Amino acid sequence: MESNAFLAIWSDVSAENEVDYLHWLTREHTTERLSVDGFCAVRAYRAIDAGICRYFIHYELTSPAVLDSDSYLRRLNTPTPWSQRIMPILGNFVRGGGQVSHAFGTGHGGVLGAVKFAADPYPDSKALQSIASRDLIVAARLLETDTGRTTLPTKEKSMREGDSTFSALLLVEGLQVQAVEEALTSAGLGAQAELFRQVFHL
Image (cartoon, rainbow, N blue to C red; front, side, top):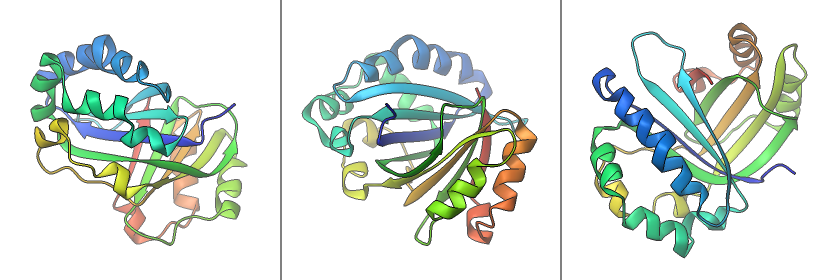
């Protein structure tokens, strides 16, 4: 059964801090998050662009209510020593959580296209179904942010600078980079969406 809620995060890290960041992410942070009630699964992707160290983290949740649950807020307000070292070095930090409003296709691909929207209009179910039906595309999902739950002040948030969020996020998963890029281009998402588009790989 696929989750109907999400938490999505991406951020940049400098090349000299990348190994420490990845060790923290895989050896502590994701394990810690998945121990919180309501966190079901996690996938981590790296941007394909040469010259930047940008990572996208996608958590599946049982409900948007997990975002302001006591157990999750307790973690956000009592970061580990390793997290206290990592949080201040994360740049271009973008975070949003909420509901999966539309989903077509099954499973997950090794390539992910992410397009964030600052405001409606978002792609509708017909547009997502068209994207998901393309060759080498595995799934297309539209995620809508619960702004109130996403923007709660926490200790972790206070340790970073310049956090931002999004109103909605389109995720397109496929088997090849070119297939995902062509799917995003063909979707007619508008000029504003093109400014907030990124392709990642596992």
